[in-house]
Image (tube, rainbow, N blue to C red; front, side):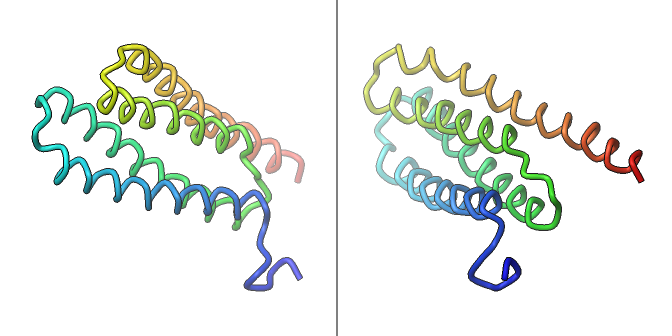
Length: 138
């Protein structure tokens, strides 16, 4: 029943849903920045574009991660959690800072970036050691 078209691995499902949602929001906010924020200072517009770029890049990464989870038994929970949280904090605070001008939100952006790095490190760890352990046990 797990292979039915409507029932998939819950870890993969959640990852794919978040990836698709990030893609939708990234395209929406990217277009808003390109067309609705032309009046902004170029530095602020650059911050907005950086937030949109990282949101879209990590949306694609989450879609690929969801597909990878579907094809393996690796749930990659920490990778998924760190990438999602890091993306929300990084991109979300870029957008909030540009719209509000409150410096506090700019301070949170590096925390999101650090979580993104931790997410990619977690994936590297899992791929290097989890998959190696599985091969060594055969």
